[in-house]
Length: 282
Image (cartoon, rainbow, N blue to C red; front, side, top):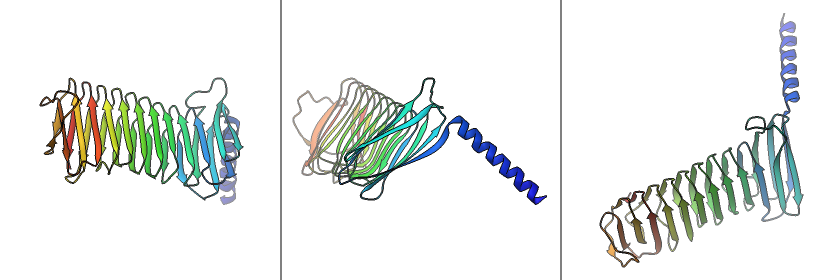
């Protein structure tokens, strides 16, 4: 009886494997040897891309396809690696999906693109460029690097980005930044909300702007900032006692304010056309 059950179980497993093979499902492991400051580009129309640090001279990419409607194109030219999900006619969000798990040297530069899948990168100190449409974008624990993000309506989360050159452009996606600092932190959104929680670093330029979305920036008492905030048609609130400062527009209570705090080491600009702006004290 036990042998019969084992044989039935084995037959079922073989049938499932055969069905998966027929459907084109499978896993592809790619390995490359690279030198310092390599560049890794992954373009995936459907499906997530997740990147973590690995060995100093090796790139490992695990790609899982979900049907025979997609294949993996890949190439290496010197210190640059390009991987592309190649869709066949008739592929859709399900049959054309590929799930990528990537390990790169910590100093590698990344270029990740996906229309519907989530994009994730962590614990790196090479430049990171992420382009998406509807999927979540999550970058965390990155230092001494450029972080450039473009998305349509996918939400964006940046956590523990230090000494970075950060530029974010979004149409309607919400942007949440926690402990983000650097020489330049710039966020532009058409209608998405922008949330910043940090200390604005020291000596940086911070530009947060949304046409119709709200902006909420939270900072501690000891933040060293020179700040100008304005909403043309929205409400503006400030929790801090600021030293007065001249502004390039008329200061009007409830719609604009300008001032400095402590040594005013960093410049902060908060602008919206009709959204609410709130500079909050932590």
